[in-house]
Image (cartoon, rainbow, N blue to C red):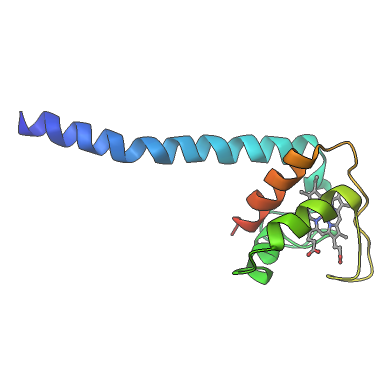
Length: 107
Ligand code: HEC
């Protein structure tokens, strides 16, 4: 009886982790589909900054998700260097925002 209870408790602890990993995999697929990895590594710079570097830069900035969501859609330059990021106008606002939040949770 006790053993079963422990198994149940363990399973309920693990489940949210599995769901979170699933969500992260979905976001990775969305980023992949939109060509983000042509210019960004998860950790280090390719053409644009590594997503972990972005997350570190904006840590504690409550406005960052909204600002970066807009920048992902509109494009922009001057924060990380002279190379601009092209706009991704084909991305919906909600997806751009989700990608921004995901980038901010990287690292
Ligand atoms: C053609 C190359 C290219 C592609 C494709 C690209 N980026 Fe970027 N990205 C850049 C560059 C270059 C910068 C640095 C811009 C700057 O210095 O302001 C950047 C910056 C960023 C930043 C930080 C912005 C800031 O103001 O700090 C985020 C977040 C970001 N990109 C996310 C994405 C996402 C998500 C995608 C896919 C939808 C994407 N990028 C696709 C080149 C690219």
